[in-house]
Image (cartoon, rainbow over all chains, first blue to last red; front, side, top):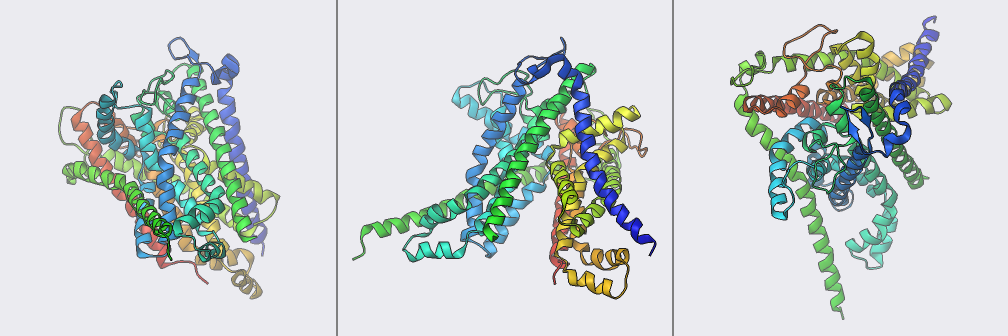
Length: 291
Length: 282
């Protein structure tokens, strides 16, 4: 029986180590971004010069680029995710078709992001370039629009999976009450299902946003890598993640490296806050549905 | 008398349904396009030499991706070594002590770690290992990937072990079996399928991770087994060759993509079979 305290001790120790791990992660990020915090203060977040040669760093163009690409990707992905989740959670619930569609939706989540980038570079970029020359804008091919299109394809599975679950949670008696009053299915969906599942749908969109903000490789490969504030949605730009991926290994100047790490800290806090809000909404929705 | 409003409403209902079907299947088109493109461009470079030789310099056709394959396998090995024991112990802890102040914080930390962008994980591994040990290395890549794997294994373990009825545990304890033996001989074997699934999905995920490896494992044109030296990996190789201007290297990258996609999708498929065949049910 002597091994019992040891065994429980190991369990507690591993649990404590997680908290130390995360505290260490926070501390490391903050400590390494200190030189740039000292040099630029909060100017990092609103100054728009990023010049590694003169050693002047302001991350505003990347913040704009990140928000632009992420929200554009959300706008593209939401109608698709919503349609899929209505089919899987309401119309085709439990049928063979739903199994097939479910698989087709889940497989893309497993494909590595670098493959999306490579594919995008050789198929989507030329397509967008011809679209741009038809619209009479500068035909770069790469840029915010291209990155958002690829990003939206990548985040559909994340948005849809949560929406399906919440749409399935809508109680039958509510739906049946509406049917018995003579409502058609689309009317039930508009007036009962969607209002009831509203917060879950919103949480799904938030979690997809969290993914979109942090997505690196696919975006880096097709966004065009420009360090200026994008002038239009077709312009080349950089996101916070892509500037880190591009310049981190080349940064020989300590201030440059530290500025990149500060961008990373901002990205970390941004995704953390969005994920936490999303998870809090899920927790409330689920407990509301059962309790 | 039925008025015209009803047939219009029924028409609207049908229209809505079929537009949902149309939009949903439209959303699956990119998947087929990706698989088709990768297969079409990758299949031609596939041969025995492709997986047993090193890449050739630009301008020369042929060559292989041996350095990437070995690197990816080594990185998976190191990250599994670091993350599986910690992940299972943590999952066990969270399923045994579900409530309480400490569990709440541990769960929160795991959630935060899971949501952290992989490029930020790369920065942390760089600061912890690369700066301390003075250079890019296989080991630092393994650490970065294990930080991504741990939350996945914890979640899978916790969710599965929670499903095991407490009567099972109590029966074992009532027979006088010690707590640790109960865990190892009753709880973990009953939930093994879920744990294995979590590990497989974790491996599939890190096999395709690129961003954190750029500043840890870094890449290497040769095969390297030394944990203290830089190492290549399939995703790094694809990224570098895809962004190069040489068509021969693009060809290598397509071949490597086909190889990687096949492995990752196979792992995902196997994990589905494991879930279905050895589901935890009582």
